[in-house]
Image (tube, rainbow, N blue to C red; front, side, top):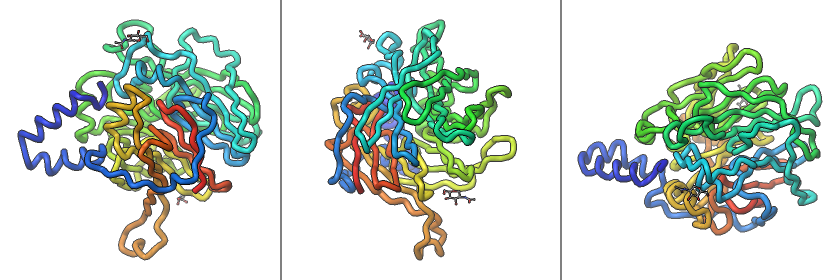
Amino acid sequence: MGVGRLLLNILIVLAAIGGGFYQLKLKPVLATLGIGRVIQPVGNTNCAAVAPELQACEKVVLHQPSGVIYLACSTRESRTHWLPNTLTLNNTGASRADYVATYDPKSQRVTKLKTLGFDSPRGLSLHGMDVVASTTNPSELYVYLVNHRAPLTGDANVVGADSSIEVFKTTLGGSTLEYVRTVDSPLIETPNDVTGSADGQEFWVTNDHGAKTGLVRQLELLGRSATSVVYCHATEGCKYAIKNMHGNNGITQAPNGTFYVIDSSGGKLSILDKQADNTLVITDVISTDRALDNIMVDSQGHVWAAGFPKALVLIQEHFKNPDILSPSNAFRFSINTGPGAFYGEKYKVDRVFEDDGTIASGTTSAVYDADRNLLFLHGIAADKLVICKL
Ligand SMILES: *[C@@H]1O[C@H](CO)[C@@H](O)[C@H](O)[C@H]1NC(C)=O
Ligand SMILES: *[C@@H]1O[C@H](CO)[C@@H](O)[C@H](O)[C@H]1NC(C)=O
């Protein structure tokens, strides 16, 4: 049910019980979820839909030097049955043959990468992803994938998914994904997105809830901070990098090692410092007016996030029937160099793209190539890749 009818009912009952509680707690939550928001289109007039064979791609990662994008895709049908982060856990309806694809905007070529040496019968059911060029050989790329496997025993509706992180290697321009390793750990409980290192040895993954299943998850929407980032190393295992965050979702890092983590239902971007022991410490939090998803850092150092102008439409309607359009938007976060900086407004948040869903529906990744002025949009249950010139 996810942020479903049940929760809405709870919210309405609570709203009826206490007006003060409504003003203080619920009103901001409902506003962040998009209730009452009017869509204000921006940046959506110079866009094109391409690559119709690429469907339901939750995460898009740009390889900046080449301009090629990597996409973690599935089928739209599968998303309506198997979306563990919204408690949609119909194991028999899940695609176990999800794939990573590349799209080169210059040649318009789509390549679905074939796995090599990955023989797990549990298959691939993809969500978050990172693609990182090796420091020793820049044409060799490590691909880190969140894989929502079915549980080995028990009913998925009760025990949840048994998700893992899969590490692969590919070459720039290649058509294969060479298997490196599977990492599973009790700490990787509800993984959403991942950011990896340039040697294939370590990664940081967000858990988007504090429990795989159960009612306690619903309390997180009201502010319970139960999500985390887990750090894993190939030989040293996994540990918490940070705990007790709220709504953790997209994660990325800048070349200088600054980390960024999205609070999805809270509509916030956290900036974190990596410590010597690979744990993370929050140094700043930037608020927005709506729910957010994946993030990336462009070549100018600006952070881009996909936003949900109407999160309830996305979750309650589009996820159940992906043909129902869901409004999309993209934010750009930058350091404020204008007059406001003097008054303590350290960051500027620009709403660079917004659309009612006709041009781009259900966007969960908004990725900007600053060198070529191209904005790439795709979504977890979306039917196409959209490219806009801004
Ligand atoms: C689960 O998925 C299967 C296969 O698509 C479908 O036949 C079945 O109706 C689904 N069950 C529920 C409860 O949606
Ligand atoms: C690290 O890089 C980001 C993105 O380019 C930038 O905003 C930030 O100021 C940098 N931090 C430091 C400590 O240099």
